[in-house]
Length: 250
Length: 268
Image (cartoon, rainbow over all chains, first blue to last red; front, side, top):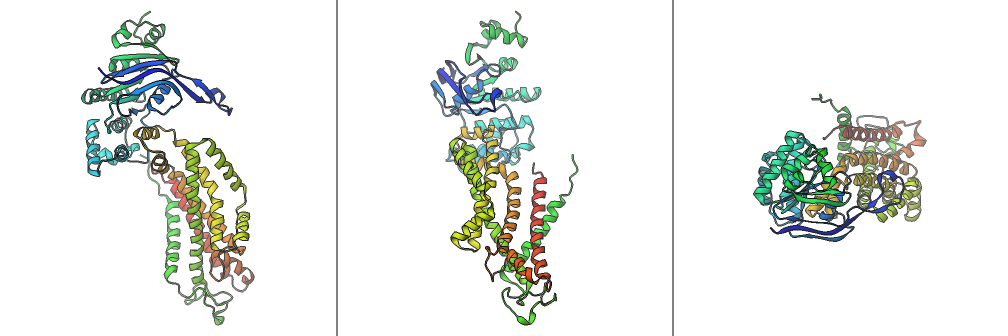
């Protein structure tokens, strides 16, 4: 399989005040990622697991080009990846209707007539399992699950080949969680979409991902297929994670 | 479901403002008498059907003068506030969105203007450019920029790192598009009441300036100028002060209630 994204020897930095010294004006530049290398194959769901503070967010920001302070190589083999966020309440512009939000991506990309845009919006809404009339609503009129579906629609309307999902279900109810996961799985299969699936929830990762990266303190600790990682973890950190989730007995 | 209470502030403020606006609008095309025509036979004439508010010391019809005078005041206030809002939004958006060194420089300039009393600023302009309507608009407009810039900057700071702004960036939206299409509409709940309060301040400031004789120039009426005129004739003709004063109060009251009502009405 071809790669859709390769990352080589990535070291990323973050400049800012840490929480403990918020009042001081001095900003510190800290290294967050240490020699991170991995590849995302076309058409796979790659799980990225790590506790908070492990550098997941910095990694994502670097991959998306938002964080520009890094050394190493990030190579995309497709158009810009799109992203869905953890909190469906802050990922949609509250003063805009759903239809506007979805059309905006097409307007920016250009060369779509008004009719084409409307058609695409209706199509993508159907794809994520929402009614057409949702387009006429504001985000605050929707439930958490519906909002997350809209976020997915907004990310996918320009037909990217790589989607980064940053804890896409951890803010949702368990029943809604499995609906959204099923939806992502379906889109993955139907559209040949590659997904980087970030989560701290091993159950969810087990359900979704064929290949898994375990990350801690800015280093990739372990990389392997789902079965290898869950049945035969090599590093002590992975064992600890699995044990904490009830998957592994010491 | 919460029972929807009637928003009396909005309703009453709307009615007062609407009535005043109608009279001002009519005043553009029609006034019962020429507001500047003098008639010595009507000097200090009492209220009557012919002269609704009576006449002033030159026999000019007070009702007509209030109609055109309030329009003049309204115009100055409106242009002032729009100027202040326009540049305030521009500066606030740039500083809030980009931050860094531009933010530091512009906000310190902002603080300097903010610390400067607007009357003093107006007097500086008047001494350079001469007194008149445009000078007042310019001076007040500049004096109004900092307060809007601050409000907008704070809002932009709040919104610029939201997930939906990041996702707009990922879609490839340019900085200007993000600032004015994605973020700016989010600020209207804060900005709109601020504009209305700013308008009230501008009405008062214009009246104050004209009262001091550096605003709208005679013989053209404005509310402040009419009030200053009325001073020496108050005992003979109280209506000379009461008429423009009442309209001034109503204008500000109407807009204050409107602003109050707007910020209470929950769009979402």
